[in-house]
Length: 341
Image 1: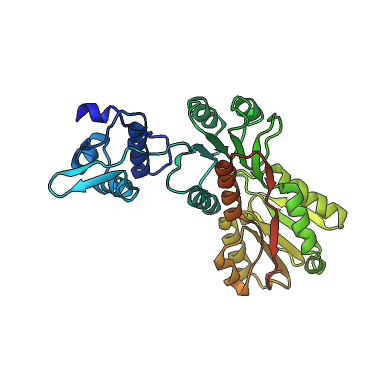
Image 2: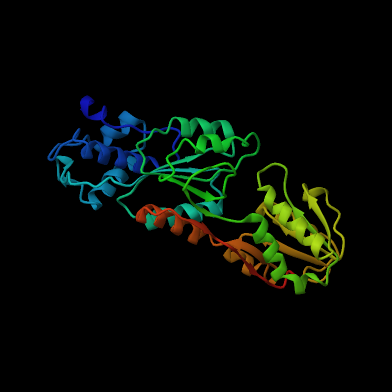
């Protein structure tokens, strides 16, 4: 079985589940003829030992391939290659800056829309430009598409140089356009500056009962500068006192203020501070949260939200892959106005 294992590989840097990596590696070896019709595959225990994965992970991989009709099994003998007619035309290098709850919605929608026959190598670089550069540099040229979210805490000014090395017919930028990227590439993106401005305009009638707007942009994580630009532009044009709060824990709450929370942790801290004060939410203090979740419909009789259609973003990106078309698609914000404002 040693020769068999030489045809397989798992990438420790990849965020793709190991069972799926193993399945995709087997499919690749079959598609290029390294593993042939009728070949026995290693037992679940052998596979588990060789790649230092749990027995459940190896078994899940085999069951997944059996469901696709690629592997068969014989009681007492184990698994064998049942079908070598495998299509492996779609192979995506998927690169996210982080995996938050809303990035997971994008991921799940993207994977679901592509379907089971697509191969996806999924990586996360934690907003670290050096890791971003390393992953793309070593990605190779064998992917049909490169779907990339480019957000950095620092040192990302030259990200366009790396992105410009990718053939534009294979490049799909997700979530944000990157200045300096040239050519006819595809994108499914948010216009952060325009979106927050328009969402605030949509909420204008409710905002008029307040004097000040404050947006909570924590210093410990990344958010596009365009969000703050759109916020400041709105405050200037509609004569609101506007400010950026980097640490809500140090903030002294003042009546007549609306707080816009970008992070869930900050939202919890804000609500705790409001509950400890004598101020009333929706009357003395307004609250708007980024990104819609089912729970926000219920908390404090409903929290107002500004949100992007994350599921639609993932679906549209996958459709660009499936259709092999080149387009730039903007996914706008939508506002849900509730009693917190």
